[in-house]
Length: 111
Image (cartoon, rainbow, N blue to C red):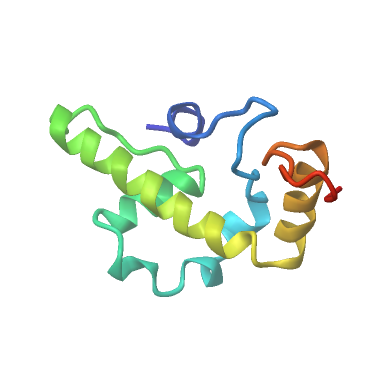
């Protein structure tokens, strides 16, 4: 499974997607992954996929592949959570907010 396959399974590339695209330098940094191995099953394989390395899944069962995809989703979600708290992540989030991706306030006096 490659990173592109994972991205097509999990990340909605449409302009209405709520998730911001995590910068590649952030995904490659080992500091970004600190402590996440406690929360993610198949952590080592999932982190390799997210970092862009290819994993041979031909010898895995469908259940194992599904479990690996779920691990990738969880790990990417945790990395996304950390990224949007960074300066670059907040800038990307603000751009999406300005575009109205997250909706508008229903109050009439609110802009």
